[in-house]
Structure formats: C-alpha cells, structure tokens
Image (cartoon, rainbow, N blue to C red; front, side, top):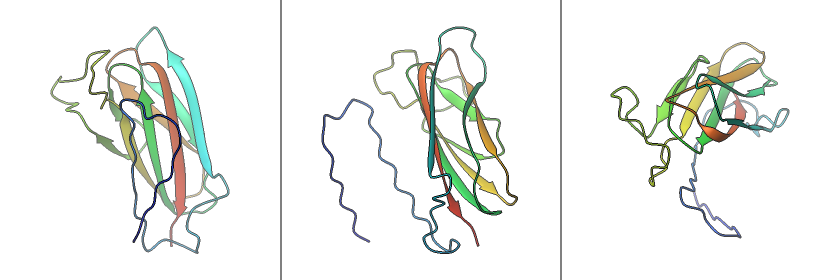
Length: 143
C-alpha cells in the first residue's frame, strides 16, 4: 500500500491523522456512501455531563463505523453507545488532562460494530466541561 498526503494550510498543534485499514468488507467499494461522513459540532460551556454527538444511519444491516470526538478542554473518558472506546490518556486512574494541557491528546475515538440496520447516535462521557467539540463518524459495509 502507498499513501500520499497532499494538504494545504497550516497545521495546528494537536492535528491528528488516523489510518484505518478495512479488509474483508462487503461489496466494493465498502465505504458506505449512503450516509457518507456525518459530523456535528457544539459547545458545552456549563453543566458537565454526557454529550450527545453525531448520529448516522448506515445503509446496510452489518458493518463497522469509526468515530472521533475532538474537544477543546478536559478529557473524553468513555462512550455510552455500544462501541469499543479508544483513548490516548489514562481515563480510569483519575489522570485526566487539565483544561489547557499543551499535549492535547484528550480526544476520544470509537469503533461501532453493528449487526442490524438502524440509526446510531454517539453519547460521549467526559471529565468536565469540554467547551467546543467536534464529532465525526463514517461507516463501512460488512459482509
């Protein structure tokens, strides 16, 4: 596999590029172009608590969706949606990032495997007020 990345503009601190290799997927192309990429943004400026992010409705009855939740402050600590949650910080030890931690690795990532058709809504858990957030998801057809 060869990957070429062409971009313009200025990188910001904390920019992240994630590659996902999907094999043994359904009919080609396996990217589910029906819903395509779904995104949502918002601001949580008071009252910490769960954040309802983006929703997507895959066009097939089986497959996998990949999601990310980027936040301005604090840490994504989990997801209530039935999914595999991925984090780059220690979320169960109390070692969450401070609001303006320079590392900015406080985002959350999830993989949702689904075996029935229907709408998927992501509900993220956090350590404190997130300020601005952006959530995106895309799906791939299963066999």
